[in-house]
Length: 314
Image 1 (cartoon, rainbow, N blue to C red):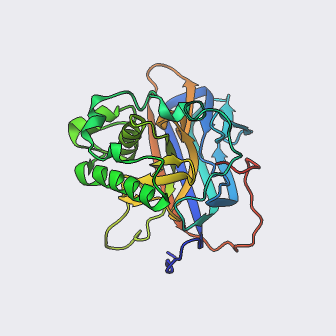
Image 2: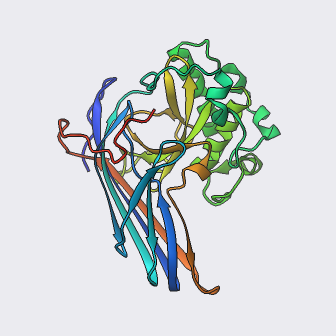
Image 3: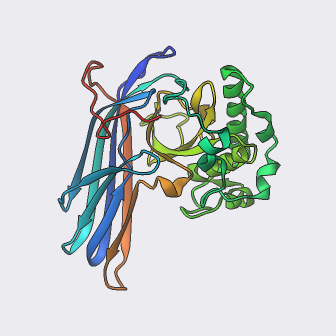
C-alpha cells in the first residue's frame, strides 16, 4: 500500500478504486435489466482520470444522466445465465478541501424552489419526531461564515458518531432512520438519512451522497475508517456562499481528499449502486458478494481527464 504524505489545503491525491460485485443464482435467470451508479464525476473537488466497467456476461452498455445528473450505466442480459460479475475500476484525483464554492450559475428562483427536493421529506428520509431529539440541529444557519458553518456541521455529525454505534446487524437496506433511533445503532446509510432529516426540518438543504472512502490504515493495526470495504454514504449540506459541504457522521469528520463521489440524491433510493430486475422460476435464489478496494494511485497529475459524463457536476 502507498504511504500518505502530509497534505496542505488544496493539495491533490490520486485514488484508485476497484469495486467488484458478483451475483450467484441457484438456477438460470434471463431478461435481466440493470442500472449502475458507480461512475465518479468531475466536480470542483475531484477529477476523473480513468474509468472502465468490465462485465461477465459481456453485453453492450449504454449511458445516460438521471434527474440528479448522476452518470448511469444501463445494460440488459437476455440470455440465460447463472452469475453476473461487474468490476468497476476508477482513478480519481481528489482535493484536500471540504468545499469549493458554488459550481453553477446563479439561480434566480426563490430559495424554496431551488432546493425543494433537498428540503422535503423523501422515501428514505420520512418526517419523524425523533429528529427533534438531536439538540444540535437548530444551531446551523446561512448567516454563519464558512468556518462556523463547517464547525456546526462537524458537531452535528459528531453527535451521531458519539451517540449511535456502528452496527451492521440491526438495520437493513430498506430501514427507516427511525430504526437507528430505536436500536441506537446502524450503518452509514442510516446515519446519513437521520442527519439529513435533522437538517431538513430546519430548512437547510441536505442531500445523500454515495461513493468511496480511502482508509489510510488498511492492512495495518490501528483505528480504521468505517465503510471502506463497500460503497460509503455521507451527507452534503448547501450554503449559499460556499456551495456543497460534505460531512461524514459515520466517521466523525468533514469530507476531504479521502472521499470519491459517484452519485447524489434525496436519499439512498435515488443512488443505489446497482439496481435491476430479472426473470426466473420462483424457486431461484440469489446470493451477492461485494468488495471495494481503495488505494493511493500513481497516475501522473497532468494526465488528461476522462469523465464519461463529459461535464462537471456541482
